[in-house]
Length: 341
Ligand code: SIN
Image 1 (cartoon, protein in one colour):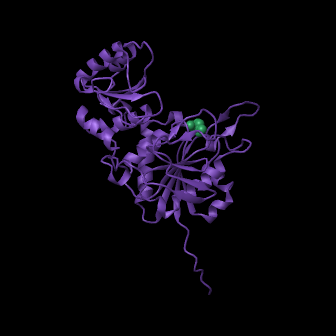
Image 2 (cartoon, helix red, strand yellow):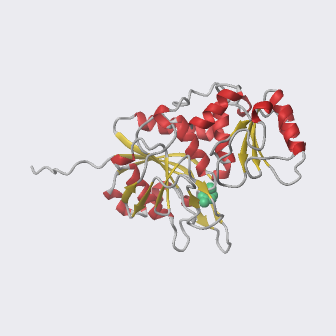
């Protein structure tokens, strides 16, 4: 009997969470319903995927990513870790809504212990739209996850022919397919119809070398048992009311989306300093969307016990602080984490 000498295609586990990539336009309307299609249907619509990998699908959630909460993050991380620990699996692809994809990607980048590729993918247009972007994004994501050079680059996001690092990616436009950008540090690579060009490796610690990986089993299913971290958006003439309200609501940490270099009004600064003295972790990030928030430039962080977010935008600073607070409340130790991840 003749035997094929072709090597077996890599096995990729696809974890489905919902989002526009699985969405359908609403009949007669301008909106769409997220997670209307199963990932099996999305895969069936792209038969060329069968040339790249052997796919196995596992549904984890069927939600719009605005509803991605920490319990779902933990479930997703657990399922991803289980797949990655299986020696037969070469990599994991996660379908996800684009709105909060950067947060989930960064969370997984910190809590999944692996050197295998982990790739998040979504779409800006629903599956039924004219010129839907989901099928090519999915094809490219599977190609990246199946590629040996994608190993040990941390969690990646594939969209619009680009490969982004979880730490660097941000959604920058409400509706356009080119919404994702990777700011100052740039792209992980390009992917053109499955042909991949990787650039420099990631700059900060991730996945296999992260102190948060693997995620320990949750001690309690209750949301309230986890450190509450709120984001507060600064503005000209900001008062202290929202900061005080967050403290009263039981926050253990606050991310200030500060003006400019993470600055905030005198009133807000006083409220934050009081909160820091009461034991809250106060992180100064920036609402500008670029640059570095450094310590002790416009605000005396040493005196107030504040933490500078370094390069992390407010939503990513929140992810790191939620994890950091499971280890320590010491602002110096937390600051070190912001310089490390
Ligand atoms: C979502 O984030 O779930 C909705 C928007 C999208 O996927 O583009």
